[in-house]
Length: 443
Image 1 (tube, rainbow, N blue to C red):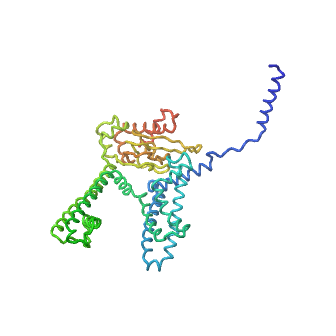
Image 2 (tube, rainbow, N blue to C red):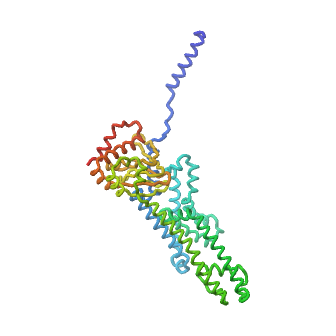
């Protein structure tokens, strides 16, 4: 190619370079600037307060107590409002309380929806994941709690008496704050096949008892035991040992049959009660399972400890079950214990102070949570949530102080573990910095 051809090309390139140099710079998108970081940190704190409750600190505990008291007050007011005399005398106050309740529960629902992206399960797509979040059982309960008020507002032809009764569904919101209710629902789900079997057995016995009574008493009392549906009503009333007395046998054989039916009723209704009670106690014991050496063997941290040290550690450890998305430790809160993961997965989120970015790490069986914070005696610098159902062993800071004084080898292992935990967030950290973590734990 000749120089005349190359020269214009060079001139064009130079001209473009000059134009780019003199062109005004485009304004930078804020990205994860200070305002966005501040907003996300506020949203993160709000999410922890509302979802973790007492685990997130005094503010979360106060919020949880306030909501529980408010929910119970709603149930009381709905009941009192159904009394005509009280509704006439205090109807205006009941109405004001109902409006305040709708406002509070609506704000709670909206704030939970706003902070939903702080849940790792709903953080990828803001709109779609929020819609998925709205379909969660607790969010559906929250929606049912406020829906009747808006239906009455926008649908004037709706039956207000039925809508008022629906306000009692607000009591279901307590399930969010009651571990016992959650455990009972879990037990019913686990034992659904056995409970369904007892229901079928009850229906069979009811039908047999009704048919027997229809044959025995049908001729003696044709107007009382006139058909099988009526006899089925008598059978279920007798099986439940209620015995209203509106339908009773008069023949000797009929009374014997009624007695046998009542005895069967005691047995058939004892079955589901026993199944639920046994499963409930099993679940409670499973959550508070006994720490054994075989369980400790799953955790590499305890490998190599002598029998004496291991036995004292077993006494000091406290076991606990953690449901998905429940916070284990919260950033900014004082470190009261370190946790050893026996089973399940956890997500650890740390906000880097230098640029406001978040670094995430996944913790699994054998990992240790909050070792560095407990050794240093400082607040947690990362929040850890259960990603799946987890089994944890907790070692309080008070018990740890006693164990560290008695067993120097345990001190060194915790120091190395703390350094390994730190490298999950900072892979470039040199290994010789492990000693810094050990020094933090020195008395």
